[in-house]
Amino acid sequence: MLRMIEVIGISEKGYSEAVQTAVEQLISAGERIHFFEVIEQRGAVREGKFKEFQVKIKVAVE
Image 1 (cartoon, one colour):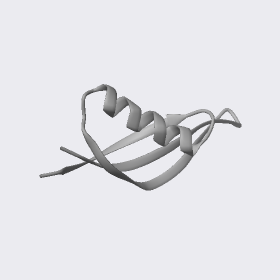
Image 2: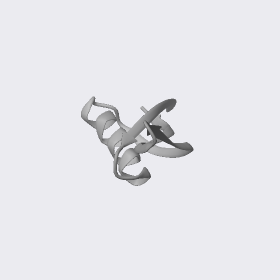
Image 3: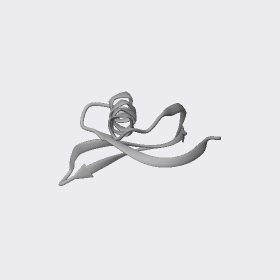
């Protein structure tokens, strides 16, 4: 049986890196990942300057 969790990945370089960071952190925490789905993308601006890329992903884990 799989369960779905939602996590947010963050990167200063791009959306792909934000996804990769989130997935790698779950793997490092011992989660067994089967697949993921990007459900939201957004960015953050601070003091008029671009700060970070953010992605919300659904991840299927055992």
